[in-house]
Structure formats: structure tokens, C-alpha cells
Image 1 (spheres, one colour):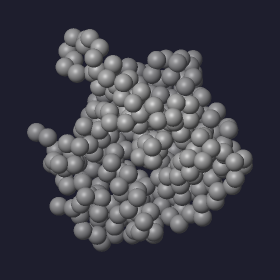
Image 2 (cartoon, rainbow, N blue to C red):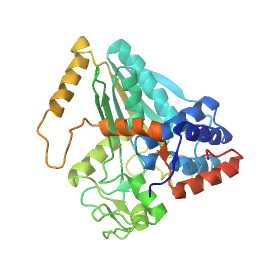
Image 3 (tube, rainbow, N blue to C red):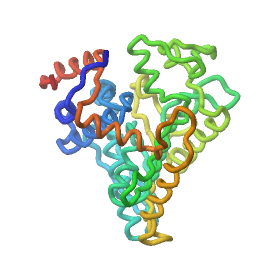
Image 4 (spheres, helix red, strand yellow):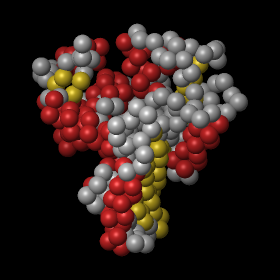
Length: 348
């Protein structure tokens, strides 16, 4: 039996009240709430409202600043450096992408490095922001250690999500959002929370042994997708979003779930590109033509349709806006605790 569904707007209202109760400005609280619900709408429950309790704790523990003084430094006409003052990564990253979009509209390319940020949720949020502005978007970020370098057995590299988005004119466009682990670490956390096993080949326990126990896996090591290729791509994220931006790197990013001693110092690199920089108004039609060619390709056995990256999630979001988002009872129990903590009404 499927878990109950709840109207997405009511869930967003609840999340807004929680973050407001934590001292965030109303506009910031609403922005974060909408971002979390967007993840749930797209089927990425691991990055949705299930994260409210851990963000709440980190704010209450003083390792996230609810009212950051975000600063923007012009480095060159096409580059900015944003310091997030340990604020919520959602707010910091959206501000950075806003800067990148503005620069790209003038110069064709906007490059914004971010330091002193925190976990910023679903990476697709920031390329969606660029796409809505008619731009190509790229988002890179560091994250807390989750997987080993190739040949190692201890955690060192982050799961390191990478997101890229390019708008079509009337077609679906292209939206990639993927971590460098075989499976998103947040999904392992949810399985651990629910006492569910995970398939073989996803993770090692703290002693370096293969495991299907989600709790041991979350406390251990996620495996990189594609072996050495995934590990190398994760290290690339450390280079671009950590070393390059002046943020924590090489195993230094503090754990979202286990380290409450100090802020995370997450780094991001946000890029916006004017899609007409080289081909003018032809970019949109060319993207639509790419999608059309993809969809006309012969289908493999078991496939009724070929879709562009991001298209399944777009359709799922459209459906869930009508039917409501799924929230399991274990997550609901935690959300009830947050509702009681701040004296706000739940959405049921």
C-alpha cells in the first residue's frame, strides 16, 4: 500500500512556518520550503522535507546561521566570489546563481564561486533557476566524505552531486542531476531510518566489508559509480568547488548528520551560460531537434519511450502537483516533532 499523499502547497506552508520559527526571514523560509517540496515533487524524497529535522537541529546547534550576511565580491567582470556566512546553502546558492545569470546576460558567461556555505539540497534547483531565466546552468558542490578514492577503503571524497541544465524552445530540454555514488547517500539514510536493507554492491561498512545493512552502510562507505571513473569525478568536484573556491576540501567538509562542532564550509561553483552566445536564436530549435532525434531512436527491449534526462522527473512533478506528495510515516513522525517543537500546525 502506498504511503499517504499530502497537498504540496500545504506541506510548503508547514515547512515555511518551521523555518520561520527557527529565526529565518520569511522570504528565506518560504524559498527553502519550496525547494524541499520541489525535491519531493520530482521523486527525490531523500532531499525533500525529510531533511527538515536535520536542518532544524543544525540551526538550533548554532552551526547554520539563520540570518547570514551574504557578501559578493567582483573578481573580474565575469566572475564573483560569494561568502555565505554559514547560512542555509539553499539561500546562498540561489543568490550565487542569480549573480551568475545576471553576468551571463551581459557578458555571455557568469562564473560564481561560493565559500562558507552549507548543504544546499537538490543540485537541480540551481540549474532549474538558470533554465527559467533562459540560460544554461551548471552547479558543482563539495560535500562531506562519503566514498573512498580508488584503491582506498576509508571515506574521503564527497558524494559530489553534479547538475547541468539546458532549456529547449518547446521541447523538454536537458537536466542532469547526479551524485558520484552508485546510489544517492540520502536514499541509504532513508533506508536506514526505515530499517530496510539495500541491494548488494552499493556500500561497505565501517570495516570495509560489503553490506546490505543500510545503517552500517550509512556509517561506512558508499561506492563510487563506475569505479575509478566515479571516484575521479568526485575528486574533480573537490578541485572545482573546494580547492578553487577557497572552501573546505579533501575530507574537510563536516558531516551534515554527525558533526555539530562547527559549520561545514561547503563550497559551490555556479555557472550560467548564454545559450545564444555562439548560435543566437537557433539554440532553442537546435535543442528541440536533439530531443526529437533522441525520441525517434529505436527502443531497447522493455522501453515504451525514450526520454531526455530530467524528463521523467518533470512528469513525476506534474503528476504529484495534482495528486499530492508521498510522505512515509517515519518522516511524518519526525515532522510532528518539529511541529510540536515550534507550536505550528501540521498539514493533516
